[in-house]
Image 1 (cartoon, rainbow, N blue to C red):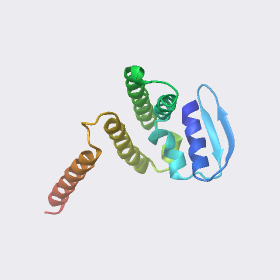
Image 2: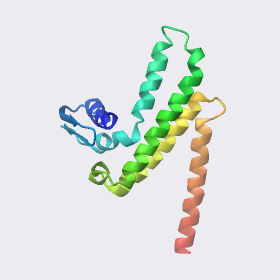
Image 3: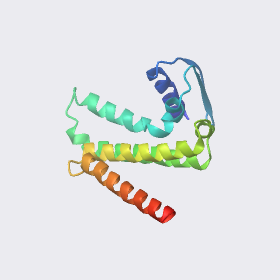
Length: 157
């Protein structure tokens, strides 16, 4: 709940808005903002907050000490926090959270799905030189194009 509400608050500030009120308890939370746009509403489902925190901490520490001996732990924490984000997001979609309905449920789940795939592969391509983000995008484009051509042919021919 804390990470979820903080993402609403942080993205509000990045969007040029103001956070009017934050309430956080064990079971639920809420943030009142001056700019409730779709990015602010969907941010907790798009941005893996704990993954970002782990990465920023690791790279900040790298300026002050040799962190290479902790690379295995770093990779574990990145994977763990990323899977936590994806599991939490899937659970939120399943429960039809008010945020998702507010932004439009079908739009929300489609947008969240696409953005999370891009984020996961971005992280993978940053961590492993064998994974090419360009190849991922190019392959995704080609498969999407083939799917839509096939869909339209079957629908209208």
